[in-house]
Amino acid sequence: MPKADTHSNQPGRANDEIESPRDRPFNAWRTPQTETAKAIVRDIIGQVQVYERYYAVRKRRRKNEDQQTFEATVSALICDAAQHYLTERGGGVFVTRSNQVLGQRSRYRPLAYRKCLPTIIDRLATPEMAFLKQEVGSRNPFTGDRRTVIHCGSRLISRIEDYGLGLEDLGQSEGEEVIILKRAKDAADYWDDGGLEEYEDMPATCQYRTEVEAINHWLAESDIAFDDTVLKRDKIIDPNERRLRRLFTRGRFDSGGRLFGGFWEDLTENQRREGLILDGEEAMELDYGQMTPRILYGLGRSVPPFHDLYVIPGFEFHRRGVKKVMNAMLFANKRLFRMPQGVRLEFSLKHRMDEVMKAIEATHPALKEYFFTGIGHHAQFRESEILVDVLLELKKRDIIGLPIHDAVVVAASKRGEVRDIMLSVFHHHTGIHGVVGGES
Image (cartoon, rainbow, N blue to C red; front, side, top):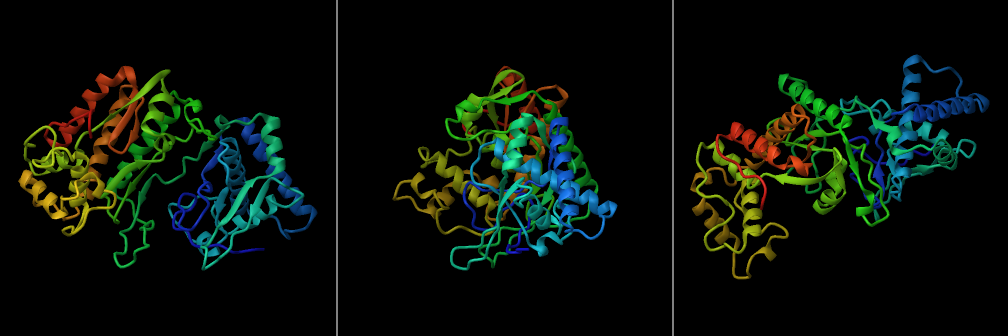
């Protein structure tokens, strides 16, 4: 069987090679949600086993553990290929055939991500089965490596149409790890994006997991819909993709910590406002203003000197640029010598980076000790703690809230109540008053 493939550090979620923009990673956590989907999966599992016996491609019966892995793998492949087909994404679903990758054991690894995966794909993609189509990956030092890509096969498409299978019939396994730790990047390696790091559970990680799982259960049962017509392009949104994960960075559980994974994150603000329907109502976005510097003022037990911390004397008409430079100063580990990428256009040609930084330092002396220390990563952790507590309070009050970094999307009629909750939680965490709404 063909084995061409390359290494992946995040099974079913990450892509570290050159891929078509429309291909997406295999989501090995996809499961059948309804009896309709389960019936299709059972039928295909049975047919694959009949194929194996008829062509004598297996010499012995699978052990119980291996049978569970086999069934979970077929189920994940069929459900994820069907989801891709139903969302009309184009492209395909890329998977790994690497024994090096599939042989690893990890808390992040689904049951369907084992060494038997390539063999099962091959079975499903035979002309006799035709449940999948497969384009085997290859290595190319000139154009870049490409993973194997799969698509719905003709017989799977027939079953989707005959059974009337829809996105509502598919779901996500609750076995997926929701507390993700990325290691620190190798400063000497430009291409290193920081892979996943294994960790031992401790009281804090157990608490984080309990909180995220509670939020996920709540969102799974909430009345959340999306009007695809606002997209005005050949794409369908799957409103069942609501399972969130909390991503910590730099190998630390006090760095990063933001929530990721909801289908609404890939939408523009206008698309969320026009297409999201929460509890039968149109949605709106409430965001915290100047969150990172305000968190740091609270950390230093100082009172912010004015309402808008990004308005700097001499640069009043360059607020967006000041915001980007100031945040870069808080995330950097050493003094900056040039404008961050894309920031130059926010200033006049006469403005120099050092001039902007000195103006920011002069305006915010209480934050001077934090600049160029990398503390922005810790401030982001505190931001994530605030957002999690906001969501838990909304859950308690039965108000749907969809997180987007430092913002929450809610039903328009709940705007006032949610704003009060956000301000209260921010004050509880920082000891100072926050800002919600308006410019961020």
